[in-house]
Amino acid sequence: MRLLVVSAGLLLGFAAAQGTGNHPEWPRWCGKAYQPTYPSFDPGGQTVEPPTLPGGPVLDVRFKPRYSIYLESDERAEFVVDAATSEWHGQPWPGLGTPDEAPPVHFTINLVSDDDVLVSGRVAVGSTANVFAFDLARLAPRLEPYAVVLFGATESGGPNVTASSELVVLPEKATGSVARLDNLRGGLLFRSAVTGGRFEPFLPYGFYASCDGFLCDEDSVRKIGAYRDLGLNSMVSLTTVFDSRAAYEYMDQLDLRFMYDLRGYYKNLTAVRQQVAAIKDFDAIYSYWGSDEPDGNQDPFNLLGEARDAIRGIDPYHPVSVTLNCQDYYFEEYSAGADFIMEDVYPIAINSTFSKWGTPCNATYGDCGCDNCRGNVQDVARRLDDLARYERWLGLWPKTKAHNPQSFHGEDYWFRDPTPAEEVAMNALAFHHGARAIASWVWPTSDALARIHGEFAKVVATAPVRDFILGGQAQRVERVEAGGLDVVDAAYWTSGKQVLLSVVNGGYEPVGGEVEIPLPESIVVGTKDAVVWGNGTWTIGHRQIRLGGVAAMSTNIVILGVTMD
Ligand SMILES: *[C@@H]1O[C@H](CO)[C@@H](O)[C@H](O)[C@H]1NC(C)=O
Ligand SMILES: *[C@@H]1O[C@H](CO)[C@@H](O)[C@H](O)[C@H]1NC(C)=O
Ligand SMILES: *[C@@H]1O[C@H](CO)[C@@H](O)[C@H](O)[C@H]1NC(C)=O
Ligand SMILES: *[C@@H]1O[C@H](CO)[C@@H](O)[C@H](O)[C@H]1NC(C)=O
Ligand SMILES: *[C@@H]1O[C@H](CO)[C@@H](O)[C@H](O)[C@H]1NC(C)=O
Image (cartoon, rainbow, N blue to C red; front, side):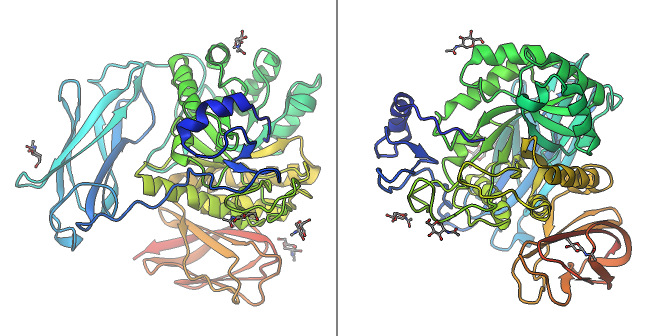
């Protein structure tokens, strides 16, 4: 996904607006010079922690519709209301020094247009993810979003807080699929004829799929079938419906879901509209790939938002993604136009300190193929944590994240393919750190990477594991004890009376002895219900789980039966 084509004229046009203060005609990547002819300079665009407000914490009231879109056939909808305290963003509220004493927020959520009350309720200060259902019957379906506003106050009236959002209620869709994003839990939902017209949780797991040698091949039908048979449920299809109609029709037949590639067109809205009009009613489409690495290429900020608006004008039923390449370069600007965010962390077998161009790589200089990476599987976890942190600092509602694993080598950046064990470890770490979808670059890949992706997809992208990952937030296990190694990362998800627990040893040595995984006090483990992945040996105590036989670069996943204290 790399295309170092630099147009000096284009760069000149907007660099002044972006205010980087350096020479815009210099070839750059993530804002940095990467050739030795040019010097190191601060690329700008870093997202930084906002200053702490002087008067102490404030109340950060925010809300969103549960789903990115609702349809005429949805009888009810929900709002998710957060009332967190914040050092950075919000409004004054009494008693925030001691949140137990802060009065609750009594609120209504109204339509801006006529002040009609949709929801009224009460939330505790310091609480998040409060869900309030309401009836959709009185909202006429339409393409334009409804502006909604929350007004909250203490029971006695003052002070008050406000927040605003948008609610989308669309006309019913008679043909093809619909996909939406879950603003509470972070995953995707999908409906089509195959799901009986009902939304189901969907964890995309597949590859970016080439035209050459695959989708545009004369043998494409057989090759697509073989791809699906590996256990992969989706792809980012790198060909147009005009060139490969039969391939798309076959994907519809197989329910092999696809993200439609618009990256080559996103600067040309006429082309975007043509493509969208031709693909929008397919059964297997789940989203559009809006733009590939606009940050790496220093594209103008506004292009993706304009492309998304053009897409929505024709097809508001599928979300639009962006792939971000940079670790810290105008995150807010480059993610603003996308409904969900993919990251390209390709860390395996890079030289993270010195590039093929002949420069060192660091925060202000060079291009080593993976921006500000250290060259290990933990780079995936760090990047997802970074993006989530930027969202918190900026006061943004977190967007759904996808991980794009590395399934290739070459270009003098990547000296070998990841091993299957590294591949699984990176994808499991991505789930630990909040990813809800996998799109690997690039198909065709090696037989070994093809097989391991299929095997892991069959496990994680289907029930029951899928429903843990999409049904809640991954919780990291603190204080994992792994014989002094700091490369063991554990996370768990709860669902009813079960916990999914995943442990990744992201180091190149086995763990001597056992890994001890202390779950929180509130979770009492009773049974080992299913081993999902890995050949480690689980020992189940009430509050202490131990895992032995932890191989180098290995992933172990188990489902436990629990009771909650
Ligand atoms: C909300 O608070 C502001 C500022 O204190 C005040 O001017 C306004 O009248 C209040 N609004 C209502 C509806 O109470
Ligand atoms: C934009 O796309 C349209 C439709 O495909 C095409 O006719 C036109 O030449 C494109 N414009 C540019 C500047 O590439
Ligand atoms: C990176 O490249 C530099 C220059 O060729 C070399 O000195 C260094 O050892 C390389 N580092 C790694 C980890 O390969
Ligand atoms: C990056 O490397 C360049 C060239 O060695 C150096 O001038 C610059 O100070 C380095 N930047 C940082 C942030 O270390
Ligand atoms: C367990 O799995 C690891 C890979 O994670 C492998 O290297 C090892 O040989 C396996 N051990 C057994 C006993 O199968």
